[in-house]
Length: 115
Image (tube, rainbow, N blue to C red; front, side):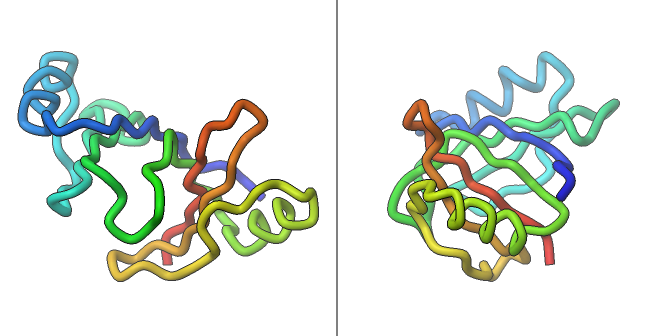
């Protein structure tokens, strides 16, 4: 299994202000679903930050997202390890398959793959 990108998720009600602030550092909006907005570097598109009010389809807002090339394999590995699954593996309408797992520090990680 390979990691494609890691994205910090910032829970905030200040999406517009965040867009402007991170724009000063060269980030541009690449996705906006209303409740989550992703900003990416124009020079390095895998360098991203997401700002979200809350996760619309999950019980908690994740602290970070990790995109992998095989989310089903990642889910199986996490389940077999006994890690706490916070949100089960499921397909989302915006084209990702994902689950949430709690890391040893208590952070919630959104593990995803694009379909």
